[in-house]
Length: 422
Ligand code: AMP
Image (cartoon, rainbow, N blue to C red; front, side):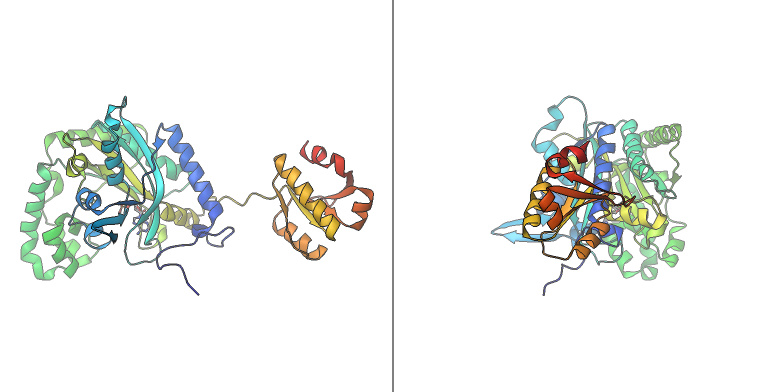
């Protein structure tokens, strides 16, 4: 017997847990598509396989994702990776297909599986699903504000309350390295007091240390150089505009000068949406401005862009934890039960024509007893049941039982479809 790969999930119809119930996924995906449409975003679908070089260059060699979490495959002398996120692939696609030549900025959204070889736990998987959106081709802070309002609209629509939006500006491509140096210089004397992970990050990706949850390290960081002190005037004024825009549409946020994102390509705006009720993995979504990405993957000219990425699994976990309404399975309009071979054939025929006429109809192609079939009809929550047994076959009428009222009536076969669809 094989089992699914650790850190992946089978999604099943009618599953107990919402996070693996296909009906919930359909519903959530459908709502996301509708919101994106309303906000004027179009769907982009890129392949799951990308060249390893794209991800390494796009996300940054020194990030956790590239240095230890990639699922790579070698074939011949080419190295492929199962995409760990979609922003770099989308920028690749944008550049490859010259989408900048289309009129206006590009507003793209996506939804699909991503892969990271992290240690699996609740809310953290090796195959997980992200949805997100990107506005490519403008550095106007209104685009940053729009991305954030769009992200918040998704959680609002699912009636998830209590999520906390944290906001920061990382400054420009010129000032970010200066801050990085200052932070390294400040932290080096504390070397022995840092955890092994942070010591490693100190040389590779020091800004990530600001994310630490270790109390002793948080204490050390209290006196560390502060990112906003290093940020350039233009970034600061963009940040002010962004905050004004968010306040104007009543999006509440907290400013967090310690917020940095794990990926290398962010400049200026960075944000994260947090939710307390789903355990240790409390980041629902995050994003920011990534004006450096296009150049990092080979574009001749810089391409300003901003976006967010959100986890589907964590959204569903949060909906479940918060008691937000979850969709129920659509009941069957009709269930057909039959006894005997001739009635069984008739049941097949009637099922077919009722389905063609638009009804949701169930029937089980087995030779189970009438009682067992009625039990299935009940479980399917069918509104009405059509009973076909010997007597019905002789009189060429079907017995139709209303499962809510218990009322029964006889309807001639030839009138059945018309009668049940009116
Ligand atoms: P990131 O690209 O790391 O900022 O991730 C964006 C969002 O994707 C996070 O806020 C999570 O909701 C989700 N996410 C990232 N990694 C995982 C994972 N391993 N398992 C489940 N969800 C994840």
